[in-house]
Length: 320
Image (cartoon, rainbow, N blue to C red; front, side):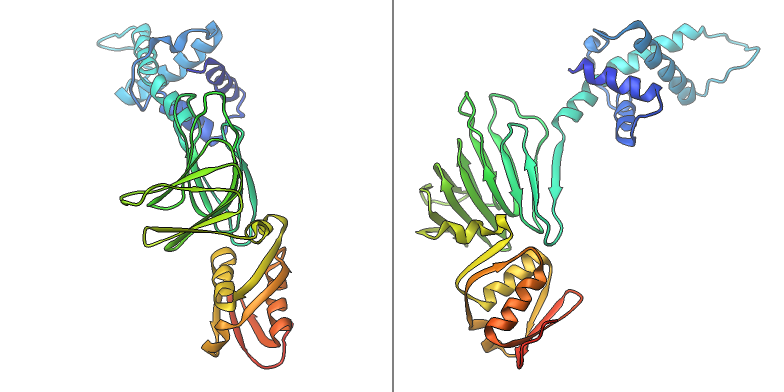
């Protein structure tokens, strides 16, 4: 239980600087019950008085007590102060538990990249349209766990206690590491893991297949709960970190899927045979329009964009 946090919240509340979240945390102190009398330890007399006064007012409001000059049945004010103190005692532990164990969820927008530092100082770089979830606090004895939907590059810090770091890439695929660097892509019905450094173990839930271990430069692909792996060019799967895309005989069908997943575009082909054309080379991905222009110029195709819909058709190249 962090007394420094509690003291900080009290001072911010008294000065009128508390945010909505901080005021909500103080409200939780008496809306969720769990006894822990140690919460008063370390608080100054002034801090205790602030909490008791506020809770005294809250108790009065709840039971309908009003300040009146005369009462038929007099109830001493100290009775309500004790009640207020007990409310605090019963609820502070639960509130602090919630605060330090809440789940943090981070979502990137289409085309956005974001670097996230985890509680153990591991770093995750998220690609566009990706969601990362993890607990706000990790115990030294527990596995470090994160959940990802989308694409992210992980640089995992090794701990003295050799804690496992587990990435839940989908409902079935788990990636276990100690300290390493790898790229995870989990979209729709397909998940990919490409290792650049260290060693990882892949497990598929509810599967009879043995665990699969990856070495640097290997890519694992899971579809229909089946894992396969092969050697690949690492840069092709991590070039997005430097705002470039590296294609190696990549079909326009796969490129259109990338435009949909990462940038939120809907791609329409006027002729289905165009989807089989293959693209090789490096393209800037700093702006999605750079990708569309490159497709237009390389294949001499007409590429038109209207809002989030892109139409690709045969004809003269277009700069739209």
